[in-house]
Image (tube, rainbow, N blue to C red; front, side, top):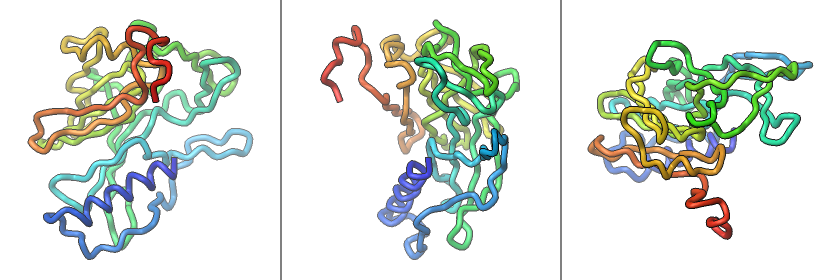
Length: 244
């Protein structure tokens, strides 16, 4: 996670150094930026679980170039006891966007945007049901109990900010593409399954948990560009053997 966050931060720095319009050409970026006192959300047999994993994606605020928005993943989890299973230390973890500002060579968190569904309920990172983006993963809690699937569950990966300050997030489950307002409320959800507007059905043929890893928006704010993490199983998994 730290390496991923560092890589994104370096990319942001390179963008700043090579963009003629940027105001930070003389800024010296740190090698790594970490939360100084990340919140502890669980302690399992002496192992502290921190809420500091803003490592899925990063975007720069178009209005304030010293501000960056960073996205969490689906929450802390490890491989489970059986094939295709995960143990979630905090099943009620809410995927979120952290707002950070560059101050004196450090990224300081100045806000948190919890992601919510259309009814205003906090999202979780739990797997979706089969037929609604489910990957077949079995979720457990730390006591070995099987957790229920969540139709609104989000494995957040890609982040883009629109000119009006709203956010677009892509995920690995469905894949889903979700439009959030500035406060994290769902404006619209788009997937190949059960939404009014849909992305092409072929995206449902993604390898389980290898959905839309990257997402960005064109400079005019009119077009989203996403990239899948793995070749599609199209028409079947055997047809992509040998693909990278």
